[in-house]
Image 1 (tube, rainbow, N blue to C red):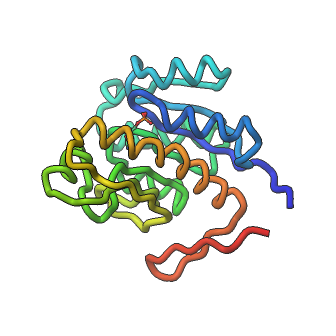
Image 2: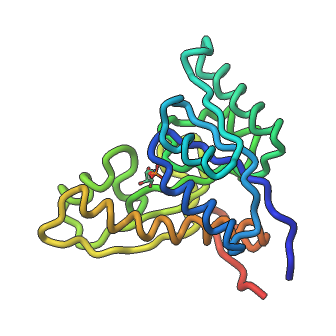
Amino acid sequence: MSVSPLPIGILVSGRGSNMEAIAAAIARGEVPARIQVVVSDRPGACALDLARQRGLKAMALEPRAYPTRQAYDLALAAALEREGVELVVLAGFMRLLSQDFLDRFPGRVINIHPALLPSFPGIDAQRQALEYGVKYSGCTVHFVDAGTDTGPIIAQAVVPVRDDDTPETLAARILVEEHRLYPQVIKWIAEGRMEFQGRRVRVRPGS
Ligand code: GRF
């Protein structure tokens, strides 16, 4: 079954490895999506350079140029709407999005978090997991609501925690799974395979 590519916008703040993994999967023809624009809240983000090297439209929108959080979020939503974005993909975007933003893209904003939610939300998730002493961790792709990493879970991947792990070694092991899982979820959404039952998100089998 061929589907027309889903127009997506990717929001980034830093390194951009998830953005790269998504762009590479699209380029290989594995995900029926098109990256309309990459937007960063930080003009110096490496992710913007990587996006431009791939010939993608990339722009910085700096919060300090706006008087309030609401004004920023509305400008961000407007920029994405202008590009025809239908799915907003947060890939290391370090700002919480307000309800004002989310209302413009209802059920169409997703995030990846480097822990098995609902454990260890927020920043430094890998360090939180190590300090707690869990033996498995991983990553979670979820829909975004106005809370911190609290939206309905779409998919998770698990990795073992080793006795000699540091936050960095654990992060690297989780990142391998992030790069596999995030494009996979975008593919499911682009194929219209998501089903909801309350907070439960299910994926219909592909044809
Ligand atoms: C990833 O670990 C992601 O789970 C978290 O922020 C990090 C972003 O990394 N939300 P990158 O910018 O995609 O390399």
